[in-house]
Image (cartoon, rainbow, N blue to C red):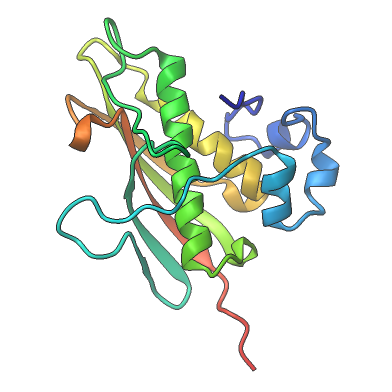
Length: 190
């Protein structure tokens, strides 16, 4: 489990001044995205495929990626399941599930962009759905797990608008599902 040390409160200064796993944030700003992922000690899961009757997980227009909902699938292929709240998963376990959703989104981005994550111009919006017990009211805090990893990897390009809602169940008993809208740079052409 990778501990996240980044707090999301809508302030860019919180990331810039906060080390991630002891890594100097000034050094991170000078790296290409793929090198930054390695330096942060992040291992991306393999990009996933559709889990139902749709044929793409990411649709690309010339400058925008519309990403289908991604589940919390770990590197070993296992899925984080269950509901968050009393008698179920804890807030921290929910944040970890949301983090895995973020890592799966990044893996899909990397695959869609031919390995060139530097083409990500802006993570525009995340929409997260949290499988929750009725008493649980902190879905917004669960989604910080996804937001934190986006901001760690993409820095200023990772700051985004976001919505978080709760539901009583998700497909495959997933704990969290996150979809994304991402602005990209056009590929280099000659």
